[in-house]
Image (cartoon, rainbow, N blue to C red; front, side, top):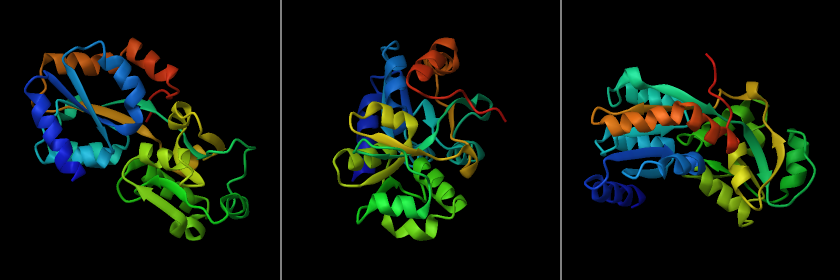
Length: 241
């Protein structure tokens, strides 16, 4: 139902909007700030995997901004985006959050278990949502997956995971550091080491239908002004590789 609704919204707005942007849910605040400078831009937010699949199925997007390079590679390999336009524009940090302010805890089975009690750990779908994919990689790397895999509350995007923590429906959450910044309740109690998961790479690209206005929007995103907006929102510079 959610996917059908998203397609319906996009089809209804595409006719009036010159530029339709698909963006990872975690990008909402900075992308909204940049998009407001482009009156003909419409942005739809969802999980990167959902957006990538919609583009592959022919959804009318001009620009796509994703939080995991594998999904961008999927689009590039399928010729669903213009390969020469693929560009990294930001990176992020993976953190563990709770709604109760407190001291940081070590990322060990004992410490997490003590804090978690009978609660659950919210994160994105570990098979499809970038935040969930990174979370699974980190838990495996730290030897914690077997202990907590069945304690995960997996949802369809990282902001939904954050919402579970904010509402007290999940004791802990694994989200991005920038998500914690936009919450009035989320409190970072642990930060996953960079080497515990693949780099969190945000990449963007143009589709075949993109016009000059779409080019201008992506250029603004990766330019000096766009980069300052991302930095103010807590995002890190693009990963060098």
